Length: 371
Image (cartoon, rainbow, N blue to C red; front, top):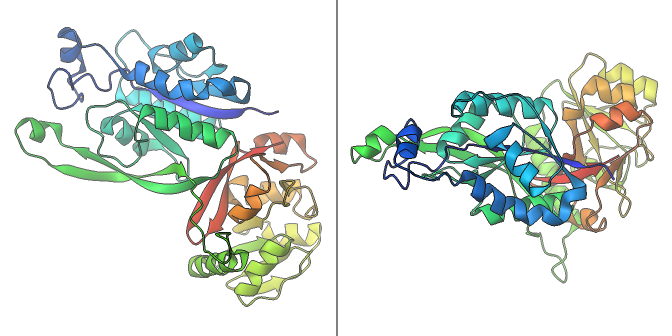
């Protein structure tokens, strides 16, 4: 079984300003340490990681050395890989930003970071659009909506993702209070951006009978979302299967049930294309590829859609692949990951450990993927 790769960043100075009554830690960490304040970020991270103890064989962490993650992971016995290097001085915001960039280059499925609003700002400054991140609350101020409600909750949510539970992606605001103003008795908050944050994927469904999700209504909702979000001049490759065929029907489009079709500007421009035809249509042209999962099995690439070949996937880009699947279909996997078998091992290894799944109107889930 392939391992789920999780990035970990600990801001060792987070939270130091609280016990020292500094109203925050930005620029005040050295003074807090001089007063004998004990750092707590590592302990709060340990609480989160304790929820993953039963998943040692399924996770590999990628982190920075020493107090930014390497020391704690070694103590807890988690398999991990170290990036970068740290000097002898206390860590800085630049260390956090550099770590985020290198973790993304390493292809981690999720970045866990422990800190406060200042740390969230540093992450937000360099994170790429769509990179899932989750904060372990360890700071003085937690105004940002990118943190779990507790360290334990951060660990439990990560475990849920690794185990194949439904985890919804949402946008979380990064906000921070001006600490200088706060120390003068003025509360001034500022918006710094948004991060892609996993949230527990509760079964909030359209109801038909017995509390079960209605596939017909979900496909209608997905069609309404897609119709509103069509990108002009972009080609959308619809893979085979009843899910995508039903989605197209709700868009008023005639596609083939078991073939691959191409849509541009709301119109079908090619039906039931072969691999060579598909490659010619996407070569040098912006595109998205939409596929679905085989119910009960989980394959999204390599079963019945071989027209979407390795060279097609490389040309379009794996970051522009979207899986379309209702929560009912995902539930048939019983926690097993989605699967890829493109016939190109190098390409399969390049797939992320978790992929975006369109599951409802403006509802994206993050779901594990294996090879």
